[in-house]
Image (cartoon, rainbow, N blue to C red; front, side, top):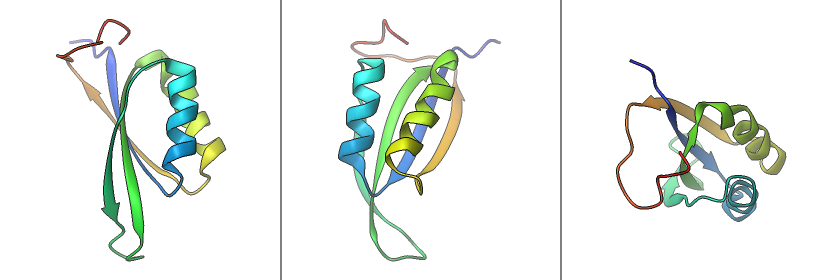
Length: 88
């Protein structure tokens, strides 16, 4: 089984900057949700984006350029269903 798509969940305190950079680079949508850090008890935002495996390095670079303390989790996904999935 070859995984072609990657789901990234990025926890950030600078969601506007992170989303703007990712949107400009990859021309795709993202989903954001508000969260709270367990240890820090401070507000955070989780940004979900699906990219292809060749875009992962650039995605990590862009996130950390805009938020050095962002936490990025990455998971391989087998398939994507929905609108605007032709670029993944």
